Image 1 (cartoon, rainbow, N blue to C red):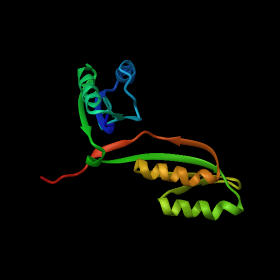
Image 2: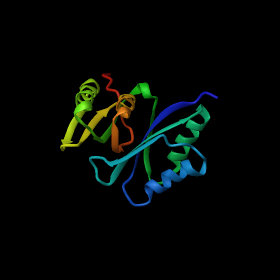
Image 3: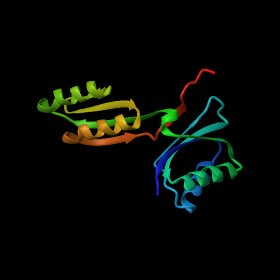
Length: 163
């Protein structure tokens, strides 16, 4: 079975219960959600849900069909990862000392991350990058004392194509 990741950009009515209904599609059919991000669009009556899910071709077709059946769903677009630009945001609070401070700053410089808050013992690092880069940053910081992590789901937009 060939498992591939697919990104679903789902425009939905912005009202209570819609997230529950969409998540219910995945729950009832045992489809996995690898990532989920939801936010309002320019029109505050419409939200965009970006869902990343893995599965074989049949599973991916079923997900798209089931999403399109929901009354609260306005439009569903599906993408392969290569067809869009993806980003995640991660904030990491770490405890640091004189011995590892330079190493942490080098990791930030290498990955494009920023130190956004700092005290005498702790710092908060922010990275906004493609999911693989965010995962790399996470692995590179395993040697330091990570106190807390907050990470968004994947956001995606189709690549620009001039016609």
